[in-house]
Image: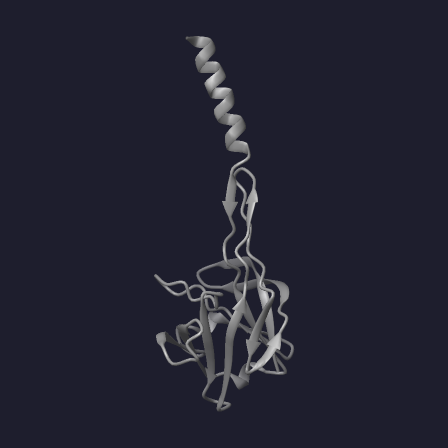
Length: 173
């Protein structure tokens, strides 16, 4: 009986090492080039059903720079990144499962992001984390190849906070 249990335990370990894990979606990070922190006052993020030609609104979020959302706006030199993912109780990253619009009322501009091509992938591993690539997007009617992007975020809210963000950047000029 002990031999059977040992054999069963070894077999269980060996088969669990080669299991296939589906990868998570990657976020799209809008990187505003040539924008100063003064160019942003309010940003409206609209989430739409994918492939619905921006006619089926799923949800809408408003981010106010000088309000509770002030720590979401990360400006360095002439570049601004808006951190959409830390809203209570919702995942607000720009993800491939939807189409998106970023509305900048102060500049009277709308940036549309749609047709996000992100193939579902999986890997064989044990306790690993992987992400699906984003091969292309349509930004304001033009096909864009996003760039794998990572940045380090520092801000001070009740202490020093430091974290790294990664995803695929679309550069907005």
